[in-house]
Image (cartoon, rainbow, N blue to C red):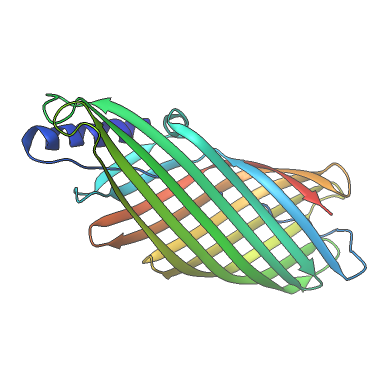
Length: 263
């Protein structure tokens, strides 16, 4: 993200030098293995906090400025990360499942302007939330494998704020953001290689507020006990949203690592 912030804030500085101001920036799950412990009511539950070292590429546009290209590695993003939280949960009963996936990130960056007349420094703060709630039905299941069809909704919310210090605009700020909902459908699968080692993966695609919303991943898991597993793999998520000058057309991808707790 550092690369994009520098470019975006430099663009802001150029705008400040000529006329007015503005720019921005912004920024996910584990399925469980087949063998699970079942409660008396037939339900099994799992919770999986995870860490996603994702980079970001695509186009971003806010505050009335033209969209700019962004290509930031995870290390660039991490330099400006204030807070991040990601987790997935699932409830299953026989062939039926209900699951959720939540991602939240908050980033910030600051840069000086070239001339410092209207402002000497510009600070950008951006928050991104993506939450999915879905349901699935197993169309194939054995003691070692499961394949299910799934469908759900993903809510996106992107909020950014520019704050100016020094110069004519000292103490002033401006906000921009959008919230939208996409419908998604796809498949999730699990295959146990051994009693301890298993593979999982999913692929979703859809649209709604966005022209396109998709999410694919593949992971390998190791079960330490009936209740604790660790998973590692790779995930890619893309969304193409634009409305009235607001552009969020991005692909996030990178390694993913999580801990699955069943109860």
